[in-house]
Amino acid sequence: MSSKVQKIVICGGGNGAHVLASILSSRENTETNVLTLYQDEAEIWNKAMENGMLYCLLPNESEIRSRPNKISKNPADVVPGANIILITVPAFSHEEYLRAIEPYIRYRTIIVGFPGLPGFEFQTRHILKAKSQFVSVLSATTFPWACRIVEYGRNVKIIGVKNYVDVAVIQDSSKGTLNPIELLQSVLGSPPVFNKTNHFLEHSLMFAVVHPGLMYGRWKYWDGIPLSEKPLFYQGTDDFQAKCVTDLDDEVQGIAKEISKRTGVDFRGCLPMHTWLVKSYGSAISNPCSLKTALVTNKAYEGMVHPMKEVKGGYVPDFKHRYLSEDVPFGLVVVKGLAKIVGLKTPVIDELIRWGQQKLGKVFIEGTELTGGHLFETRAPQVYGITSLKDLRAVMGL
Ligand code: NAI
Image 1 (cartoon, helix red, strand yellow):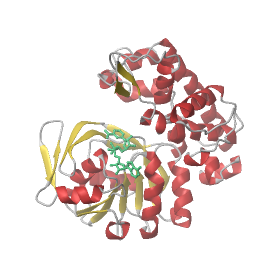
Image 2 (spheres, rainbow, N blue to C red; image 1 turned 45 degrees about the horizontal axis):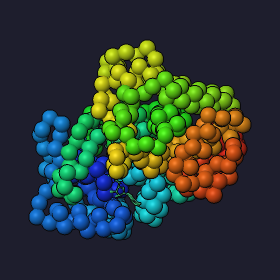
Image 3 (cartoon, protein in one colour; image 1 turned 90 degrees about the horizontal axis):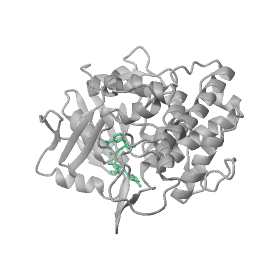
Image 4 (cartoon, protein in one colour; image 1 turned 90 degrees about the vertical axis):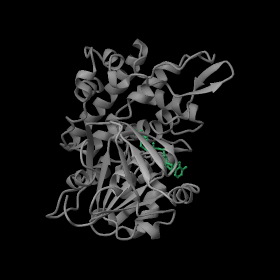
């Protein structure tokens, strides 16, 4: 790593923020601060750290002991001077954090959505306005560490680390220095290895398919009777669920092809979900012959169950879980918005949005139109005034 001190701010106060705070504070040549705007998390975390260190237990049972420099609720305390800002909160909180850090962002700061999720590109551009031209903005497809807080502010456990994480570069303002992905890699170490993807819109298209597809397929015809146990999420995939994911995926591939055709941008990295699963999980999948078998026989998905709430008589699905609350407004609705821009009909996506919005108690679309009263809570491009191919081309830098 370079000898220059990297001034890092972690935005968030949850599981992911604890892991990043632990790893980054343990590195030489870093000054790591935490910004958490949520309730009294900063106060609780500071109190927990009064007489001790932050412990992070790794999957091999070894431990990192470290201490972030400063934890605060006030951006003015921790953001000025930062050259790397990592945002690791659910997508619905991205806006609050982006608005909070915006006044303190300086030339060539790197901002990472960790993960960014669909529409992060439109939102950062909208909130940072002119500043978005002189910072670097990255969007990771996922958070590399599966992790859980054991004791708030003191103890966090890493359950697993992904070997590779795809990262899209939304804006690169590095000049003659390490590019933003190299810098991210140098401060975080590996694994994970960060891979640069072809184009940031590939993310926005690809990753909205699996969670809503599996949720819809499993619960659309549920009779409302509590279950005695939680069903497996991926490994329990049946034919109908696999068809729901495949039908969604086919529409997504059609949108990618159309945008590619109309803009000349290469979207070959926007892989069909079956291809992506086999490529990403390799030998962990014992039968890769179809989408269904790739989900059902993937060892990495062992033990992962549907999000459920315990009630009298068993378990019922938790429709407010991020598989719908993130993946519909910050996933399918963004994809629908892109389809609208290129004039494609999306009957499957529309049906899933209508079902998902009803479970969430929101209205994003009415019929097939993006006119619902809660549309402004989503990151559809239309929310940011991107309504035509010309607007989209401008965002894509064409
Ligand atoms: P978390 O649920 O532990 O943390 C959420 C944090 O976000 C809270 O501690 C708080 O600081 C902030 N927050 C929550 N609600 C808020 C609100 N209404 N207003 C303002 N701030 C609020 O989430 P976690 O586990 O840290 O995950 C962060 C992101 O990483 C999420 O998008 C999640 O889906 C993703 N992710 C997490 C993984 C994990 O193992 N923790 C694995 C893969 C992805």
